[in-house]
Image (cartoon, rainbow, N blue to C red; front, side):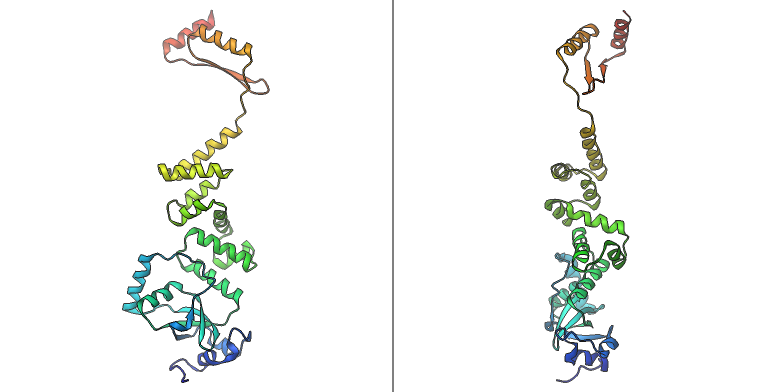
Length: 293
């Protein structure tokens, strides 16, 4: 097999040396020398990344990339790891890889790395979070995978992805949303602001009720926040005690005396108030006169 022209001694050694196969677990000095170098690889020799966090690719932007590749070629190389002498696995650049396949390219430029599965997963997740327009749920899942599968703390992960810890926490909280709310966020039927407002509700039933209001009535984030505060206020409001027969009679006598609606409210401890309703200045004056009698 002839060497590819223009690759240089170091890169050729990486491509052809069995010691750099992923199954060998051995890293050589030649590996260190060629990191960052680019080779043209046959597309058929590259397999998809099983750790790819992106699960949805919009057809419109993908086809635009296909057209750009047909006209200009691949501007930014993909990144792969070496599996064997003639086999590679994608680490990052899945959109470019898919678009190149659709465009009918037979080979693409690639950075070649040697990495174990955990390092590959971390590289793929971090690269996608930083460079791709993942939807909020995909970002949240990527953060969660970095924590669970790469054994990173939130602090260490926030440094890896270049985000502050509060931002990371806000994304992770999205995974607490019910599945139908997560899907609506992925499909841009609701915004991140809506999702954060929904997380303020104390139970799933209230959250889904507010979610339905967003879809049906187009409620804004502020309206959902106010709706949540109102629901919480009703819960914390002291329950009114039932009026005894004597108090109900007092209420009826007051309504007869003032000729308007009267309400007596009292709590479980016996504290309360009397509310007298009036509809006009004249009616208010009659109430005052009745009180003075």
